Length: 114
Length: 113
Figure 1 (cartoon, one colour):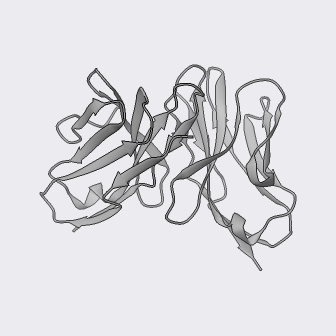
Figure 2 (cartoon, rainbow over the protein chains, first blue to last red):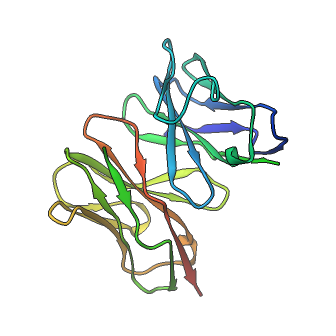
């Protein structure tokens, strides 16, 4: 199974600043996803980040607010820009293992915006 | 579009008692269904999945779920829970052939000694 790590595991940030979250996978994967889990709510897909193409954003999410990089098959970053308290959430990276089709999740990054 | 409803936000149950965590979905197309577990401070882990075939699906840690198309349900069950089963459980659905998951709001299972 794919093993995913995220950095940082948690952070407290000031309003108006930006935070970049890193996602590292121990194997090469084509499909990678970024999810958000707001307090007391379910996981919501932010975008799909496939290597070699622009990220595809879900309704309600835009590139200016959540720019994503996918430089290779094992790494991706999500930036939360110009943060406000409403961005306080857990952000999770997820990958689909190419050979099995299984979807795996990282441990998440807990972001608090003050 | 798909959506998932988990009716119970919290379920307390005594150790060695049976448990059922409810999940209902809505979709106009055929779907795949999943249950994930999230232990404290850990990532989501797949418990089991229904793709096709037998409607009774067995997963890890003694859990099983039954797909009921007529009732659009995919309830999770375990005949005897253990303290270590205390966690958050998420039901998820995706359209057949797709990869992006739609999640329910989660059910926090607390096993009481």
